[in-house]
Amino acid sequence: MKALDRFKVVSGLTVNTNKSHIYFCNTMRRTRCDILRSVNFKEGTLPVTYLGLPLITKRLTRAGCAPLIDRIMARVNSWTSKALSFAGRLQLIKSTLVNMQVFWCSVFFLPGSVIKECVRMLRTFLWGQSKGKVKWADVCKPLKEGGLGVKDLRLWNKALLLKQVWNILKNQSLWANWCHAHLMRHTNFWELPVRGPLSWSWRQMLRLRMLAKEHILYVCGNGERFSLWYDPWLHGQSVHALYGHRVIYDSGLGCHARVKEVIWQGAWCWPTVSVDLLDIQQRVQVIPISTEQDRIYWGTRGQDFSTANAWQVIRTPSTEVSWHAIVWHPMRIPKHAFCLWLTLRGAHKTMDKLMAVGVLQSDLCVFNCGDRESMAHLFFLCPFSASIWTEVLRKCNVNRTELQWDEAVAWMIRNSKGDKFPATLRKLAFAATVYHIWLERNRRCFKNCYLPM
Ligand SMILES: [Zn+2]
Image (cartoon, rainbow, N blue to C red; front, side, top):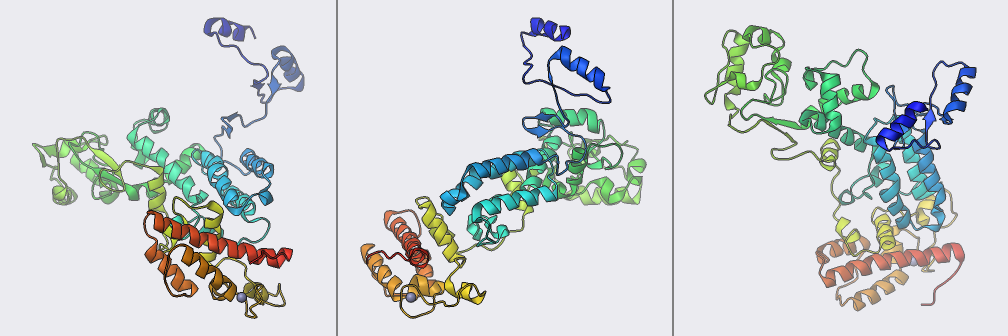
């Protein structure tokens, strides 16, 4: 404690005993008690957490992720999901819950079981205990591809860790500097072996190299920065990966040679003492040399790394849906948009579906038209809905014949482009009508309550 008191006098920083912990390892119980009495700190348990994250060198276990899962659980339980609309729950998932996980993802490679657990919590929060109206994989697709744009944790985890690979290659953070000084020493990042006493997180980082290499573009300039043998500047590969160690030996240039050593007066000038070296001299002719610095880009020339872009290139895109713009326009009313999204995905549990799985005995339309209730019927074909559409179209000054559901959606896509007032009004009216038909149908189904016509 004397040392800490001196530290306080010198630095002006006081140790807060309430917030300080002391950690023991292989210490006798009596000694532990004596120390605890004299320092007045609480005894802490490993791992130590910093900014809410455990500081570990070993593999991150499920138990290590308990703080993350507990925090999400606490947050989820503090909001009563039943009291919120789907749109409200979605907003909370996107703004808060996913971000809590993304924070962890930016530091660790999360174990599969933890990702599964997180997804399960988010899914239950969105849909309740039921199976869910839309598959989670579809929920995680971007809006344009018919999803809700929730971040897919597995992919985001990779994209966020690729940023760390990028930082190492560009040597642009304190951590990257530290990696260069202590973990890589003078070895090229691409050549570091994944063996020996490496920390678990560093090992994960090294394993991401293959993926990173597919998207990182090395553009030669004056050749001062790139390693001649190990950086993948030769059509996306390194000379060492293509020709092995022999060319290094034959060239006599040494392992630490830079690309500039085979450039002479603005032209490629490889030592031509072996067949392989002659071959390389041929292959590099198409690579232009300049007086600029060597640069690396992400994806395409001129592009810096961004996590969003990394996510974009490592995922498998789905085909775009034509209707996304009529749902997710800037003026949308969130709960109407969510209902319309479910409708366009065919995800509402209409009577015909419930009867097919044996939940209901009858699938008669609740609007008493005598027909069966299906999506197409409920939202368009039913005389009740048709009368509402006629009125809505009249109020929007739209003069067209009545259409079936698919045709009506296609009409909307064609005729409500842009954000001018009539287009926005049509989109708002379209979503509101769908929402209110669904609401009225549910009122009649579950509450036996009828709105006056
Ligand atoms: Zn009907």
